[in-house]
Image (cartoon, rainbow, N blue to C red):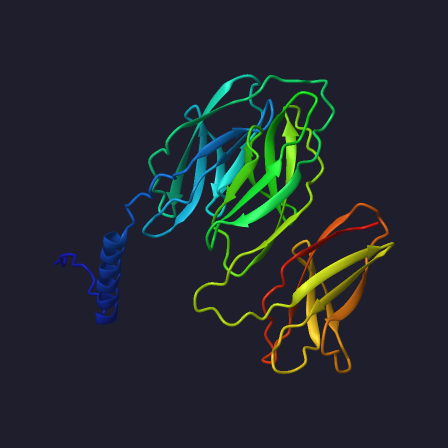
Length: 322
């Protein structure tokens, strides 16, 4: 007689594993992220040339965290950007044309925010034969506007056609753009207790950029409850052919400071070490640099503290080689 077919019996361990996997699957379903980020706010669009518009926005919020942004022109996506990027240049645009932009945020689960408010910028007419850059902006100054914001102001540049935009740089990296009719810029989200060096360049419709303005230095106040200031003070620099001579006063730490770290344009350059007892007051160090006239350096220093950690950076000092 043929016996009826029966399903094989699972060992108790396998049954327990199956139940555990089922429970995990249920947990994952319950924890699935279905909430979209908020729409980016504060979107601005500035025509920088006949074919370029600079778009900026403020960070969106999400319950799990924003992972990126998408920029749209006339409803069509033109840029995908990571979460840490809050501005971009949209290039290859038609001259003398209004262009409308929106921005959306996304999270790791693929949820996409609503569109931001739409903003429009009109590119200027093309000037193909224009090869003359604007003059440099002058009299740049930086003023604190609270603990985490600053306002820059400058005198306008001149151009044989017209200035279409001003670009703001911090330690050589562009961080902001305003229309050519503006001579001020407000910078936000600055870090507390941080030294900044700002410069401004003017730009025309043919993408010619002026030389940098003279720099403006600014240090934001320390955060409430921050440790005592450990930054070197009084940093000055003097350029000679092939060298820069720096002078500064080390921070008071209770013991002589024998080691400092020097940064040029925001990047580590060298460590300054005294083998013997350093002088009690201002100290001097000469740094060799390429003998190329007209190169601008932004210098900052920090000291090695008695506990072996690095202290705060000094206020920046800028110098131009001769």
